[in-house]
Image 1 (spheres, rainbow, N blue to C red):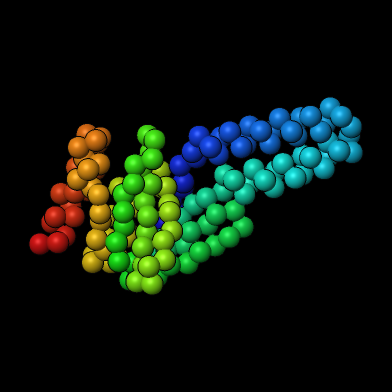
Image 2: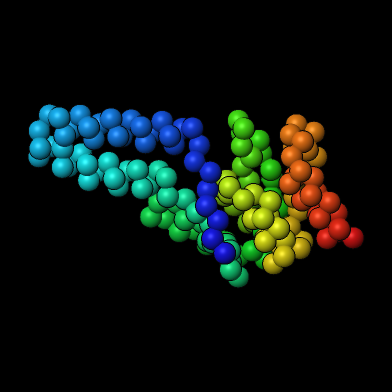
Length: 148
């Protein structure tokens, strides 16, 4: 299943700046406008294209880069609040850390837990106190059920 990433404010700022530079390049001359347009499209793709595919492994796609993680090797997931979003730090047995920010966070974690029920979820209580989100409460109750 494919999960899409949250687009953060910083990413919006970068895309806006690139778009403005593309327009300036087009205003200055046609040749530099075409080059600015092509480079701008590539940069926007690199900044915005982030998604996650869960099959037997977790594939993190960021721009042109694909990172593969064995779901059975995931030890724990830290839930980290950042602004109004919650990011997930995925830590495997070699202590490698990958930060992901799926839009469908609860479904993403549930999917990982179906494949590897031994994944430990950290910081869920602090998030529940900070943000009375029903999905977080549901996730916490499901984790308790899975651990019993």
